[in-house]
Length: 480
Image (tube, one colour):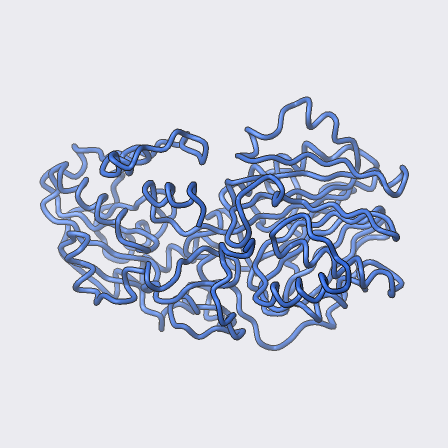
């Protein structure tokens, strides 16, 4: 873990998604850089470390790709001038939070390759479990790597396969046969936009349409932002190719077993997104209802920890009949680039993001809903803030099961020695965070969040990995 990531743990115990991807092809030839910018802005929650856009003109020279990338938030990296320079009617964009590979400008995406068949720009969301072996094999055949991210391995494999295939989409499919792990890809070739999703469907990807343009995005909320209508989700194992003739699909890589990340519904995705035909907002409402059914307690108000705890708190209130209240004011302007507090200021770090409305909680028995407890430090501070503001009791309800195992598929669930639930009972955790009671969502109720669908991954809660995990934890150490 780099120093900036260590500092971030002082601010928050949040789990981070690795990336968000976006692509658009305008058949009328209109410039699309601004649309990619807005799409990435809508996906900012999926990665706040770096971002980038690559564009091309399908009527111009085949090897001409313009790109702009940088460290920071979307609205910090791009200016009107930099977007004006990105002329082209086809493009891909990316927002990143690193889970494997160092945090530096060299690892920003999209990756742009120039090779014998032309150009390739690639944006990747996910994490490969066999990246070190693939990288070693490519290196022994002459590949020289410019980054320390597994996405470059994917780009090289596609470029090599393209030398032996009739089309780039066929090259993508052949490369997928060698990949193990999580990947949702958006790829730009000189005349095509391609989307691909791993056969398990770990990470989301969907298709939209706006006038005479097609869009690929990690979440449907990004389609709404650019005025595109939702068409459908890219199926797990599917490769879609978009060109002037429309959408062409290859389903030959699909398989019966699916493993969509359940935590997308609990926390990662925006509540106004639908993933694989399931409303994220409704999933969180259901989580709150289940918590009320499972852990009833006498209380005066239900409050959610912003933002992902809010919908679950509403669900708890609907099921229990206990009044829903707003207890926290969130500072919306805190991003990755604000000056971090020194170690001596850890106690006040949570207050930089949240403050309690004393008049709401004073002399009240409070049910506090949050999406997860990772290390426990943030939960302890929030409980203390509520009690310092006069709450008589604080009953904590968590809309996910306890984190017990690390994730290897594109999220930064840490190693088990850093997970508070790994070596502590629920009662011990309750005592450590200072709550009057504590209840987690049951693993056996997770399928209810996605309307009974059993095709999801819950390995971070159960240890039941759909793919055998790497023998060594490569997350954050891929650059060694």
